[in-house]
Amino acid sequence: MSSTGISPQASSTGVVFSSSRLAYAASVKEDEKDTTDAATLAASAPNSAKGSPAVSIHDAERAESTTADDEKALANYLVPALEKGVKNARLKPASRWIQFRVWYNPYRINFTLAFALNMIGILVACLHKFPYAEKHNAALALGNIVASVACRNELFLRYVLYWPIVKAFQKWTPLWMRIFWTGFLQHIGGIHSGCAASGIAWFIFAVVRTFQHHVAKHTPKVVLAWGIVTVVVTVVTMVAAMPWIRAHHHNFFERHHRFAGWASVIFVWIFVCLTDSLDVEGGFTSSGRRLAQTQEFWFALFITVLIAIPWFTIRQVPVEITTPSPRVAVIKFQRGIQQGLLGRISRSATMEYHGFGIISEGVDSGCHYIIAGVQGDWTRGLVSDPPKQLWTREMKFAGLPYLAHLYRRGIAICTGSGIGAVLSTCVQLDNWFLIWIGSDMEKTFGPVLFDMIHRTIPKERYILFDTKKEGRRPDTMKMLKDIYVSFKAEVVLITSNPVGNAELMQGCKENGMHSFGPLWDS
Image (tube, rainbow, N blue to C red; front, side, top):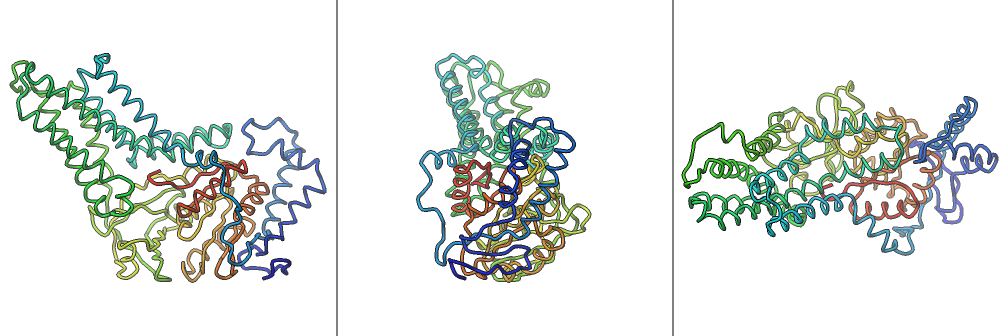
């Protein structure tokens, strides 16, 4: 390919690849020919947060017709490509303000709010200005833990948060509101970690207060000792979930965060039962009615139920695993799945559950797939020693793509095995555009995905760019801007590696495009 001029070549993917000097002419020419139509579309565009003014039936029909023409033009879109050897079209990094806005995402905002409010509460309690905390410090600790566990519970997230919000706010509400809900739900992990850390802080406060008042209240030594044990176990649970440990010592995280977490629930129950059964003389009473009337009892019960529910849905299921390349395992499961859901799988009933996006043509398709890219020992084992059965949780959890229902139109852009998270969205929803970028893609991922794309997605709704085949990388931001305007998208969903996610989200911020991408513990 030459950087100065390339003859367009038809491609089986439904797109044409070109250098950065080539552009999609069809939609641009349409705009230049009829500025009146462009103004009409701009006024009624779905990505307007202010809402659309009333239009006549004739105007609405013209807008729909023009939108259809724009979509057809995208079938011949010429993908702008970079010069050979160039990895990024960006000449200078994004401004510090843009970098900060991408870094200080809703996850960190949620964490800041949850943690700061609790720290203020502890400070006020230390100054003896918070009477409730003096009497119910353990309840405040357990209340935070309830919120933390709920934010990671499949049942609570899917049916109490995601489903009602999508049903109530999809498409008709102002765009800013849908963007807010997407950011909040995608980054609800900030509440999980913020409330977990706060709960431990309240436990420490409770134990300190118990030691301070143990003489006046005749607190037995067994209660004091058990309070210390409970704090130590919960701290171990929290430390095991630190990002650095999760990234570099995943097995340590799996064992300690899960099993220390279960142990801490047991220790919390014992601590609650001991403290709430104390009488004024320092002895114990066995009144179950008194225990059932305490807040601490019900918080501990809710924690136990939330943790236990997903484990009642685990099943060992048959799977078919194909390995089109040493880098990827394509896992086929029985029964179809709706788009937007993710699944957890493991070789063991209790250990090493890994979450993956689910690919399916729909609930009636009879099967679904998981694409496991080799990233560590566990996924490497799926390629080198593929099992015939895997353990999975039948209760699937909602992920970021589930929120695609909120938008009238959107773009899903992914690299490599990131296709596993978004392909179902573009297959099952006809208002989403797929951009998939990878190296030697068909050889790496096999024919299953390509066959599904060609059968189920019209050629004007997807772009597949093979960097090895083309010998260069695409100008991703220019391509995104072009498709965003032509497809009249409201949002971009990004699934790439951490560096790619950050760069694309910064570029989208600079160009006024709403975007979301997976972040650590999002």
